[in-house]
Amino acid sequence: MSRIALSSPALSRTTTTAIAVVSALGLGLGLTSCSSGGSGQVGANAKQTLTVWAMGEEGARIDGVAKKFNEKYPDITVKVTPIGWDVAHQKLVSAAAADKLPDMAQLGSTWVGEFIDLGVLEPVDTKTFKKDDFFPAAWKGNEKDGEVYGVPWYVDTRVLYYRTDLAEKAGVDKAPVTWDEHLELAESLKKLDSTKWAFSLPAGGQGSWQNWLPYLFSAGGSLTDADGRLTLDSPEAITAFTEYQKYFEAGLAKNTTAAPGYDVIKDFGADRVPMFASGPWMVQNINDQLPQLKGKWDAVPLPHGEQPASMIGGSSLVSFASSEHKAAAQEFTKFLTDATTQADWYEMAKSLPANKAAWQEPALKNADVDVFRKSLDSAGDVPPLAQWEQIAHEIDVTLEKLAKGGDPATLAGQLQKKTEGMVG
Image (cartoon, rainbow, N blue to C red; front, side):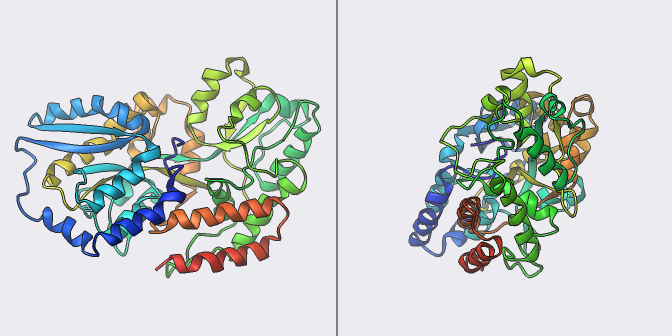
């Protein structure tokens, strides 16, 4: 699971089965979950235990933040259960089916729609949490039918990493800004003897949709229209598929899926793959694993078509309708999304703050994160779609066919037909 927290490696295999299990246990699941928390609510100042599920590195680190929260609320014991991203989705769905959810949890940004559909999330108090405090795309990913169901906690986005020294060797002395400039740089880098593939671009395979979405947003497109219908065969989508395919057609990117566990960092350091797109965690990975490349690489905004664009990922904090500790959950969510706490969290975990005000704190102002702020300002969003994982899988399959030479317009039409019934 990448730090972007968009999806779990097991989701495309498990989501359909998990939803079926929930349905089999009774269509009244949402009612059951809501009613169990309808009485006996505990005030935030009462002595109590707040149960929290957190994933990945966040699950391992959040205890330290919880201790600071206890200084303000000494009667609230925060009990954190760390869960691996690989099992988190199944564990949450199973807990929903058994009505054994915690009080609150961290949800990957593309999971929110599914849990809204299951009826287990408590709506957010929008008088307490303000839309304008957060990056627009992060907020929109939690909003459906006029209700908000999660508060953005941290965000991730995509930027272009490239070897500046190899670019200069190839005769290019500035970062690519447009799609055309990026393609030209890739063609120049391909001519170097050391280059195997000029650009690491997923040729299908799980999660490859994350690399394609910025092309869609940059073409001026979106995943859905104003009525919530998928638009995967729109002119903008076809433009995005066409631009994505150019790298495979020209032999600039490998047209087969990467082997499991492939680490682009090794090829980046060995001069074999001088460009790739990824998230902010790669900065630390490059610095730690490739210290010899200091001053020889850069991270820049993704080259664009009609408009600058990237994509947004990350995690949101949600409370469950079955909880009897909603007041405490709200206070802990307020604490975790406060600008000062978010800045402290960045220093601890290097997770980019979802609260825009946190970027004015010294921890962020003194960090080399401007490229990510620019990308977040222009990031597109994934709407909270209940069956997003199935839709994402179909995009991955389409990209695999695209890399093999399939016609972009034909594939876009086929994708639309396969997926349009997945949105209710």
